[in-house]
Image: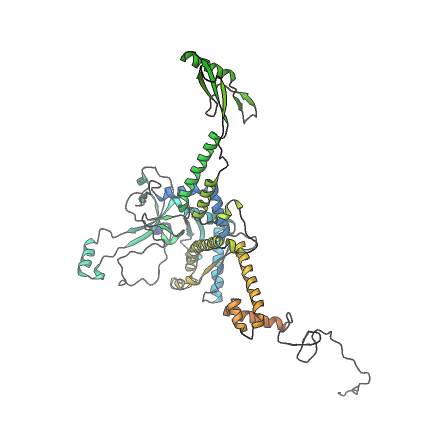
Length: 550
C-alpha cells in the first residue's frame, strides 16, 4: 500500500540474513513514531504546552509573527540565503569527488534541474524560512511511474502539519515465543528480530477535533513510501518526548516573558501617567445622606469631562461616562481645613525600559543571534574587529551548521534523480555522497573585515621580519608560519609568479640590477629600463651579386 502513492528504491544486493541486531534502525534525528493507536501513536504533553506535534508547529508559527522573533529569523535567513542577481544561492561542489568529468557534468546538470523544480532562485528565502520555523520540511517527489527513468517530474511542497513519519513493527505479537526461545538458547539467529516498516502518513486535513485526537488516527491518512518523500529536519530532538523540535523552541519562554512585560508596562503607563487631583469637600454638619448628595452635586457642577474623538478629531463634553483615571472627591467634616484641592503626581519611572531591553537580549540570545543586531544598534566596527569577534563568530558558525543541515534535502533529491536516471548505482552513491558538497553564497561583512585585518597584520609582520630572512629565518618558514600558506597555496603562488615574470608583468627579483639607475638588467648586460635603439645601417656594406649569396 505504501508504494501506491510513491515509489521505493532498493539495493540490488540485500543484506546478509546473518547480520542481525536486536536494535531496530533509528531515524537520522533519533525520533521514533510508532503507529499503534491515536494520533499516530504519539501523545506529547509538556506541562500542558502542547499535546501533539500539530500543536507544536502551530505554536512555532504564532511565535514567528512576533516582531522581535520575526526580526531575528530574518537575520538568520538573510545570512544563510544570500540573494544575488547573477548567481544562484547555492552551487554544487564536486572538487573532492573522485569521478570522471562526464559524471561530474551530469551531476551538475541534474542538480540544476532540481533547483529549477524547486524554483530555488526565487523561493529560496521562503523555503529556508519555512524549514527554520517548522523545524521540518517535506517535499513529494512526483515521477512518471510508467517511465521512471525520466527522473523527478515535480517537487510538491507538503505542509508539515499534514505529514508524519511512522515506523511500524509489522511482526509485533507474532514472534514473542520465538523471541523468548532465542533468549533462552543464547542463539542470536533464533531471536525474532523486529521487522520495521517505515513510511510517511499524509493527512489531507490537518485540523482535527481538539480533545479527540483519535479522530485523526493513522488509519485516516494516506500511506506514502519513504523514498517518495524528501524531508529534512532541524536535528533538534526532545528524546524524552520523542518529537522533533524547531530552533524556535528555546525561545518559547523568552517570548512569553517579553509579551507579559510589555503588556504590564502598557497597563502601568496608562494608569500612572496622568496627574490626578484630590478634592476635599467641606460638608459641615450635614447628615450622612445629605452630605453624600451634596458631594455628588459639587462633582457634577465642577467636573468637566472632555473627550477626544479620534475618528472625527472633535472634542466634546461627555459627563455621563465614568473613567478609572478621573479625580478623587472626598468629604471633610467641620473642624477640618475646609475645602482643599491637592494633586497626586504621576509615575516617576515611566522612562525605565531596562527590563524590556533585558528580555529582548534574552530572546535574541535564545535564538543564537548577536544582541548587537537588535534594532540595528552597534553595527560593524570598521577598526579592529576583535571587539565584536566572539558574538559574530558564534553566529557565523551557527549559520554554517544550519546550512549543512539544510543541504541534506538536496542530497536526498539528487540521490533519487541520479538513481532513477541510472547515472550512478546505489552502491556508488554511498561512496560518492560523502564527497559532494554544497557551496552557498557568502555575504558576511564581518568576515571580510576579519580577513582584511588578519592579512594586514601578517604583511606588517613579514615586513618587520624581512631583514632577518636568510639570516635567521628562511623564506619557506616565513610563508608557512607568518603568512600561513599551505603546501598547495605555495605551489600555486610559485607557479603564478613564474608565469607573470615570464610574461613581463612583474620584474624578476633575481635579475641583475644596474648600479647607476637601479633598473633590472637582462642576462646580456643591457639595462631593461633603457629605450631600445635601432642599429645603424652602414651604407658601405657589401652587397651580394646577382644570383649569389652574401
